[in-house]
Image (tube, rainbow, N blue to C red; front, top):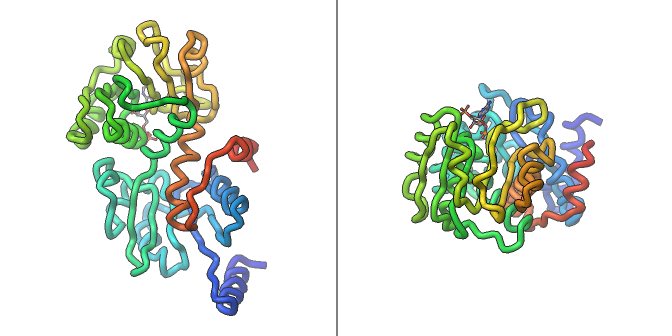
Length: 298
Ligand code: ATR
C-alpha cells in the first residue's frame, strides 16, 4: 500500500475514533543515516504511544516552506539536522533564548495555534550524557577545555557556562571561528570564556576538570586527534562527541592513563528526549537496552 493510501486509512480511522496518530520526523539533507528514527521508534514502541517518526529528506531550497507547512501537513513537530539548523532558527515564530545565542534550532514544536516554537537540545543532551555516564559529574567542578568551534561546540560551551562552569577554554584550528563563538556566547553564566590557539592545546589541559572533543577528528575515516595528554589531571573527565567509532583514539588514550571517560552516543540519545516529550507527552529514558538497539543498526 502506498504511503498516501496508508495516511488516508489512518486519518479515516482516527476520524472514527476521534484519535490522531501523532506524527513527527527529522528534516535533513541527506538524512538517510540519521539514527533519530530508530531512537524515537524505540520509545514509541516501548511506551505504547500511538505515534510515528519518519526521515524527511528536504533540500535547503525547500526547507523554509516545508518547515512552515509542518502543522498543515499533520505534524506535531520535527527535529532538524544538517544542514538546516541555522535556517530553522530564522523560520520559526519564536525561539528559546539559548537557541538564539547558539544560532541553531534542532527541535521544533507546532503549537496549538499553529505557530512554530524552536529550541536546541544539544546542550541538554551533552550535560545529561555526562551526568548519566559519570556519577557525580558537575560542570562547576573546574575548568573545561572544549576542542572545536562548530555548531556542537556552541551548544556545549553555552550549556557548560549555563550550568556553572568556572572557566571554559575553547581551542579551534580556525581561531576566528572560536573568537566568533566567544563573542556570541559572552555573558552566559558567570564563568570565564577564553579562546586559545590550536597549537596550545596540550598546554591548555593544565588544571582542567573536563576535556571535550567536538571536532570531527577521530571519526571513522578521519585522522585521529593529535593531542599530548601529559598535562591533563588524572581525574579529569574526557568526553568525545564522536560516536562512530564509540571508542575513539582520544578516549582510548585517556582511558589508558587512568582518566574517566564518557563516549558520545549518549549525547545523541539524550538530546532526543525533550522533543519526544513535547510531541508525545512522555519524557523518555536512555537505557542500556536503547543503546544496544541503536548500535545494532537496521
Ligand atoms: P559541527 O557543527 O557538528 O560541530 P562543524 O561545524 O563541521 O561540525 O565543525 C567541525 C569542527 O571540527 C570544527 O571546529 C573544525 O575546525 P575548523 O573550524 O577550523 O574547520 C574541526 N576540524 C575539522 N577537521 C579538522 C582538522 N583536520 N584539524 C582540526 N580541527 C578540525
